[in-house]
Image (cartoon, rainbow, N blue to C red; front, side):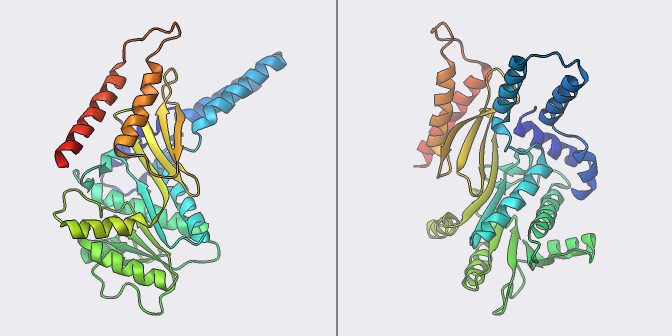
Length: 343
């Protein structure tokens, strides 16, 4: 199995090689099942084709091994798996009565932890919109009772482009943050803001407030409202943080390349921190669960604690740190240094 980081990167890299749409790659990428699933299938095929002479003890050991390797089974195998699972988790959150929902697919190639969405290469913006379309379509499939869904894009030009590109067969409406009235007084449905930017903050907050008053859910998919490169004042920053702080995170996937880990959440479960297993590359172990998002110094301390536990060998002696462990320690030190400068 390859790591969720590799899975997401490979999916994003494949889509970066051409300007064709996210949906155009769907059939090709779905054929590329994860190494984890291929390995499991291969083991089952091999055992079934061999002579049935294995002992009950061997079978029990195999079952225990499979159970151990399934410890990270909730992590997605690829980008499509992540998008579809995120839509399912969002549907559960809506059914549970959540009115303000956040979905985060923080893929390294399309997301920067400071400035938010990255549109460095031609076609990157379109990939974000195609992810939004896939998410919206899956969400509608998850709601068999019917759902009026409006996907709101940052500006009118983008909305017009996508209407023309996707045609009239869509089962959801397309709007823009520039529209005069996103939420009329008689509105019934769900608003989905796709990659909302800092300029849209006022519209997002007001629309969310009005929609929630009418008992209509609002979803923020990969919001960029917390962008570090936007020059906003302290009052607006606090207003934004307060707004985002009361929303429910239905799904969050944040790979951590600097420590070979992943911060993960899926409604209604808690926040989880996975770190790649020491002797099983591509497999992850759950090292922490909490009701709050692990971030900042807390995240650094959790990762450091995991690697400190690996510093002691079987003989009780301290072993030399690997390159990954040294990088993780350096990244944590630099993060603390940067934070001290901002205080």
